[in-house]
Image (cartoon, rainbow, N blue to C red; front, top):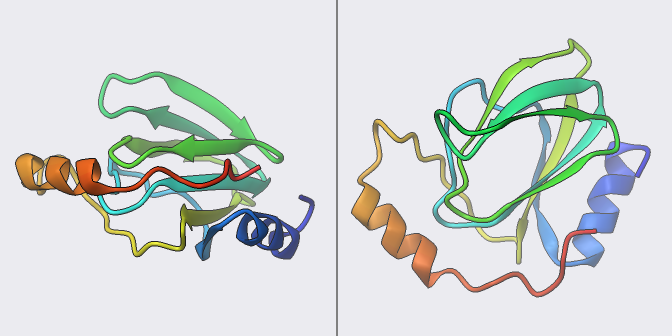
Length: 122
């Protein structure tokens, strides 16, 4: 997947759509209404996964990260040319939950009600 359009087409063909092109938010957040995939098209980023205290991973062009609903993530620093294509299993609508601002019990109910994805994104 060399270009954003190629990444989007490949994801859509496997049932991952309702996508976007951008970076990754620099605050801890998760999605309670959709499973998300991130495809790094250009650049690199250090990303914390799983919320505060979670492991920090180095992502670079060509990397793909699958984030089941409820998986926290945060950009801890990235190159100026970072470009990520994101998409959601089944094209579901997504929300942005911040741990400090989200009612956890309600988010857990939404996550538990989500169906599994039909195909892996790649």
